[in-house]
Amino acid sequence: MIHYSCDLCGKSLGKERYEANIEITPVHDPDELTEDDLDTDHLQQIGEEISQMGSTKDFELEETGPKRMKFDFCTACAHRFAKTPLHPKMSRAVRYSEN
Ligand SMILES: [Zn+2]
Image (cartoon, rainbow, N blue to C red; front, side):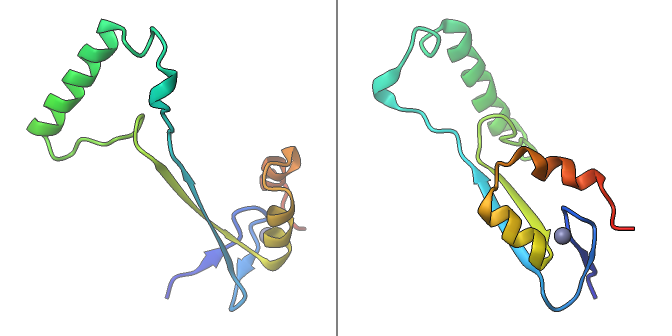
């Protein structure tokens, strides 16, 4: 059985568990190409990445692909996160333990 603990406060989670699925996807607007986008080094880099993709199956789209993150929260933290997902205190709360 998988044991879950809250990713924010570290509390052990029982039946009541909340999940936050966050996906960060790079968005490129084709109408807003800058000179950097057309830079030859950049195009060469893409070419190298494509050739890497062809040669190895282990290639990861770490920099360019969407990132998916999953967090487990207890009830209190889930409500807090839903209210202010980008609140500066959210990241600091990880260091605090409930003693
Ligand atoms: Zn929590």
